[in-house]
Length: 248
Image (tube, rainbow, N blue to C red; front, side):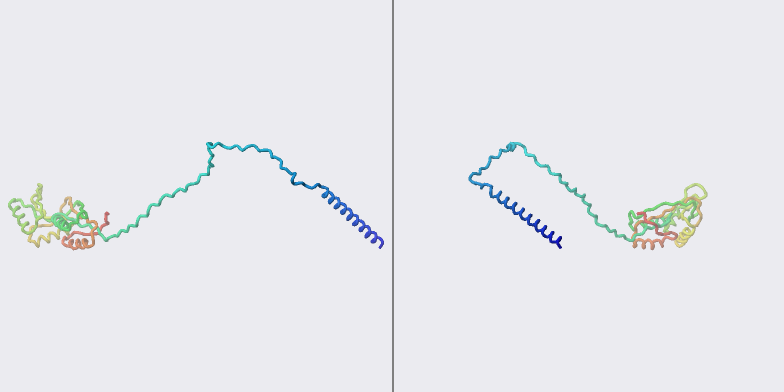
């Protein structure tokens, strides 16, 4: 109990001593402030500041540097795209290409005349073929010139305008060739036609020689012309009309 009272009294003394010291210090500070002399504003003057070095000025004629600006990138124009071409629509027409043949002798002359009447222009062409052997319709050799002339006149009167007199020396000299054909069937059909015209002396035989014949080529025909040719072909026994690939 005594110890506790001792410590309380000691603490109170310490606090009291500290308060006294702080009061003395505050009084001294106040006295120092009051001891400063009063400021007389009328006696205050401004001191002259040292002049700074004059700033150098450029003459009027001196060029003024122009600030260089960074180059501005110029956009590159894209190449103009070519205008799209309008779509072309090709209208295909139905055309056909044909071969008609083959012809020789009198049939060649008739077929040529029939095709010429159609006025096909550059749609019509022809090609030649050759056979090593063929058939012909003929009148046997007539040795007497007068009899030969009479026979030729009779043929003309019966409408047989295409004929050929063999002039080469040999067994067939002065024979009258009425037509040469690739097949025996074609020769026989022509022979039968001659019989209806009254030609009784004609014969059909094999001709052991090279036979040239003609084939007509018809390109780009329309349907109507193709139909007309099919009808025309019926008048030429032994001929063949067939479709072929077009060349253009």
